[in-house]
Length: 260
Image (cartoon, rainbow, N blue to C red; front, top):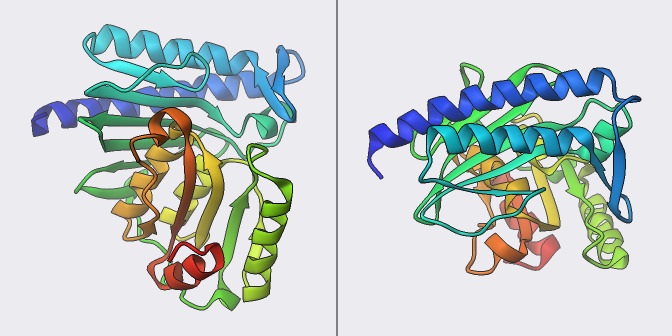
């Protein structure tokens, strides 16, 4: 795909992210009134998730009718021109009136992520990146943290019920023993954006889906960080682990996770 087509899609993605963030704020303002259901144990779905994804699909379909969409709520599959979207990442926070959630939009061309946009509705902040073009928070260029000492580092260790509880506890214990300040904030996409922004130093989760990861992973790499590389022949359909961190922490993170 040529550069002008990528640039057109980036402008569109940034506009769409802002639209979806505005919709999310509207639903959040009346969170006690909207419908909330459960997809599984501690896995909630709100009226806002479905409505915002439908808006995404309608806008993408009308603007780029040859492109395909893979989304958390309505699914999809791999295609040469593919939008990968999460209408609300951090739905459990959103449903409880906690403002740590975001809208995530990635665009892939021929299997490579070209564009990532993450909107944080509560702060009206937009993180965005283009492959080879850097990563930004609104108009400020992003750079990951320079921290290399785990005793000075903050890690967000996401928890997935698709993996054993004992593994999560043991993993978190190893990060704590190494000296990391550890938290679990509840939004993978926003955690990855915060790594790109140098606000935290590491994000790890043992299982995520592409709509959770792809936009944020591009942000981290374009901000000079390092990631474990989420995309494999299986991960687009089945999900997988993700590690993203400052360059100086990669070695110790690999040792903790036994991935080095």
